Amino acid sequence: MLGAAVLALLFLPHTAAPARGAPPPPPGSATGASAAVEEVTGFGSNPGALRMFRHVPDGLPGGRPVVVALHGCTQNATGYGTSSGWTELADRWGFSVVLPGQTAANNLNSCFNWFRPADIGRGAGEAASIAQMVDRQLADTGADAGRVHVTGLSAGGGMAAVMLAAYPDKFRAGGVVAGLPYGCAQAAGSPFVCMYVGASQTPGQWGDRVRAAAGSHDGPWPRLAVLHGTADRTVVPANMTALVAQWTDLHGTDREPDVSDTVAGHPHRVYENAAGEPVAETYEITGMGHGQPVDPGTGPEQCGTAGAYSLDAGLCAAHRLGTLWGLG
Image 1 (cartoon, helix red, strand yellow):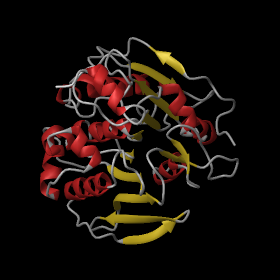
Image 2: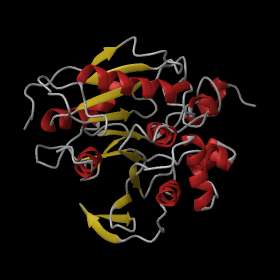
Image 3: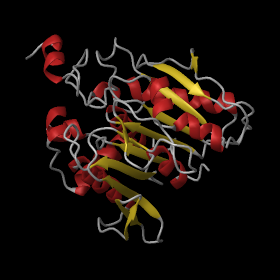
């Protein structure tokens, strides 16, 4: 088996080897002036040894929503909060953002360990640390516990799926950007196969993985949105298809879209339950590779800044997700 240093050489810059296990993928204000991103310590037992950062706009009243935003590999919490547009939208619309941070001690390239069994179960590892951050944020800000959402890019997207599966009672909705379905590394037999090929599972098998993770929870299930570049070769778009299969199975719906249209020129599909309520939707970002879609500018639907793994696609994923979740 290759050592960590050799794996790091093989997979940089697109992915990097973790310190343990196999390598994952890289990665108008409502409340007044912008506050800085701050680090919070002592937020719980922190079994996953993560760091907690947050952005709380100045003067934010109680009862407002929370977004947990998880960075990709080679990124950090503060940088992802800014480049994705989430902190900008928090100031504009009036909500707070929790920004978990990975450490090099856990993973050489600062990737969340979405593939590692010890970090993806309820009450264990990194998943439990992120859940503790949510509890601390609710306690400190008086936020609405019924309006907590989670999203992330790449490895952070994989960990967002983990949080929706392991803690469906904590999250109203989630957004996975260039990420992977829950249990994909185990289903594929390897995180590499999951990333570069995808895993072969029936919708029922995908759903069963989440049901096993959720324990006694049998619904309601969070709503899911997935954004993925059609030219992504680091985490192939087959993972978006698998996420739809996983979450429509949980919601008891078929996999035929009830709405097919375009948003900012990109194909968009919505999957509804029997009551006509959206339970899953996808955005295929035409021609985009591996990264977070942003739309830099000052327009009302624009946000984010372009850079490494932050790609100008004419659509800001954070704005689109925030709109779906009613944050504005």
